[in-house]
Amino acid sequence: MKPPRLPLPTRDGVGPSCVGLAHGPWPTIAEFLVERFPAITREAWLERIAAGDVIDEHHVPVTVQRRYESPLRVYYYRTLDAEVTIPFEEQVLFQDDQLVVVDKPPFLPVTPTGKYLQQSLLVRLKRKLKLDDLVPLHRIDRSTSGLVLFSVRPETRGAYQAMFPQRRIAKHYEAVVPWQDGVSSVPEVYRSRLVDDEHFMRVKEEPGEPNSETRIVVREARGGQALLQLSPVTGRKHQLRVHCMALGMPIVNDPIYPVLMPENTDDFDKPLQLLAKSVAFLDPVTGDLRNFTSPRSLSLAPR
Image (cartoon, rainbow, N blue to C red; front, top):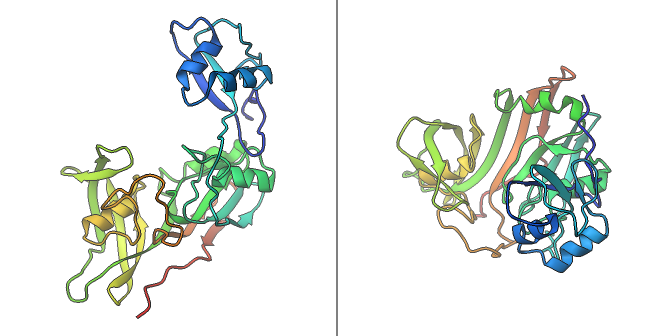
């Protein structure tokens, strides 16, 4: 069944955002929006409302005088005054009626978040491919490069999304890490329990029943570095990065582990050396065996 039409269409690659109106004391919807989103000025909200860019779930425009109603969902367009341009381009590797497979560059988030809107992979693709219903089937970190799969059709999206929690998709990554010949060693399988850290950007290990598992193969080691193949069995946040750090070999150029770098300190000349290299799965809709590989590659530092 096709999902209901949203009150606002996709515009310039950006779909409408939604906020729920919970029980509260606000006299009007406009007053709620001004208080709920302090980063957006009152004048900006009034301009959006006057332009008809704030609509409720029943497709009724919000006016400045409209009284606050709860429960109700309100839709609006998120905008940013300025964005840092990510100077790298994505590459569409495959496209059919069901799937789009893209090779993502580093530093580009998969979906809009924080200070990134137009400079997100999803919005770029919606503009480029003219596919308003495009939705990512999974995520990789903004710092990570490599393969990302997108669903084209809402009717078949659930079948593809189910592959991930059911572990019916094989994913392989590459990573460059520090290495000391004769000292460094890694297990073939590493398991640990990952939980949220005190800082929302990070996760950490703690004692207890493992909830994460990574298979590790050393592909090459020389000159103080090693090239690893990392195959996550589970899909926990930052799993590969934390597992490598726990083994004493944090991934080269990692801005979060072991030290969280300050915001706005991206160095485009030093991307994280973590690549989502390949995915393989039996297509749940067509029955075909799918196998995709990123054209990118990681290499060890020159001798």
